[in-house]
Length: 278
Image (cartoon, rainbow, N blue to C red; front, top):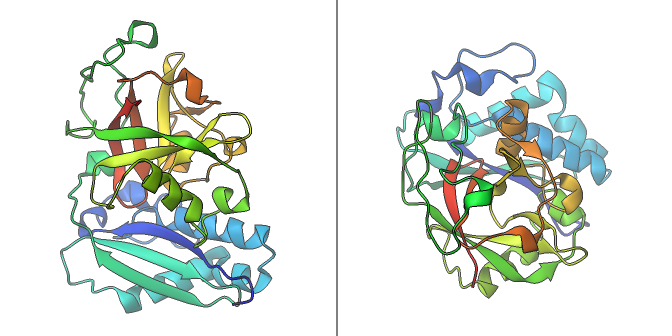
């Protein structure tokens, strides 16, 4: 490829999703009775936005509109064994010439409907003004909340990252994310650890290396705006549309050791996190 990179999006294949009406609400054209691909139209939309941004007109035409979504479903159907009950991590790659490639690997982490489509992101037990540095506060649970699990450890990258088109749009040029993981000694993708990227311009939190992030500010879960340099994540978009969070600038200096947060992505859904500052 002349550009040296591809566009891509990672999503979950899981038979658990098939009967969930909420999973096909945003479908273009004729809405299917079900889909085992997590928020598939949102993944198509993010790749389409990226293709349009980079001027990849042929690629954009291949995935735009109802016909483009149908074409993507057809490609996925060729690559995935629908008889399998095991969830998969699907990677959809799009070349500049419009070629679509599908990669899949087994997902070891289990999940639930509540983790994929929560009714809310449970607020922290301790309000912002009552945080206790170094403590790991309990979180209130309610109906429709993801199950209480050991929270992810969320670290802060000690170095800054330059915001660019490659941080706003998801491409295979991901050295800035891998470098942040190396700097915080995250060795594998199976560890329940995440690192927050920090803009080298103004110390604003951009996003996680693999996730969108949400912080409790002024009585609401708040996710960094795209203007801070991070991506327009699929689960982030869904959470904003459902009113589970709002956008707002989060600075690295505002983080408190032990504060609760949420993280999310298109493979694992929504997970609880705890900020750990060195």
